[in-house]
Length: 260
Image (cartoon, rainbow, N blue to C red; front, side, top):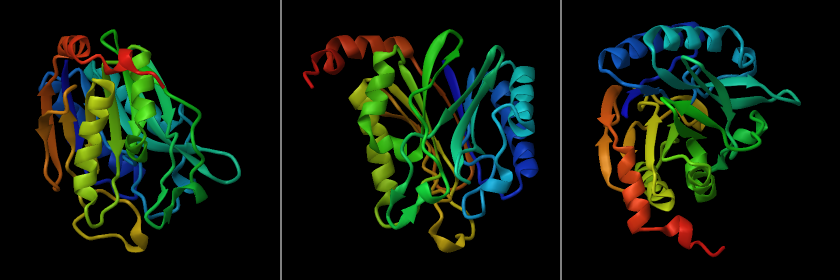
């Protein structure tokens, strides 16, 4: 499967961000990709009130995303925000393409390193798989990558590839942690992990909002790096061999050997 990652820097204008998405969808189509992954918070960057930009999963923003994906004939995953309860929003990954409309709400909210995402974001309820050319693909968002159980749960449900969309928080050692975690989750689940983050902003935002560090990465089922970007905006296209996942799982059956 050919996958494309678009490491963008979202603005606080959802309409302008859709224009960015349209450019990336066209580039992925021209590259022959079957799956395009954009970051968490593609709809609107962190660091601004999220309630005013949140829309239902069938609202105008996600509808336009689906139209772009349908026209290009590929599946697109991009992060946005949908209304939650109690005045909060849900941190939602939209997945759209021919015959595909799905939404995953981030399960693990980022209450760490002095940031409290739970004050504005309501957690989701569980895993979501989407079909890409008949292949079940798992969805995860940012802080989820610190929780191995989500990735092994996807493997148990038949996924050989898991997408992670992120807007990773900056700080000492954070890029190294991101790299380690993406590769470790690939090893935990003996799966391909396609992890796309927001590019590092040219000007840091105030308030410590997690607005990206770049370093989008594709990791194979033995933790090897199949492709990686730097901090700046960029594109990455990688051909992943999902049949190789089966071979690794036969040789290294950690999923089958689990006792807990």
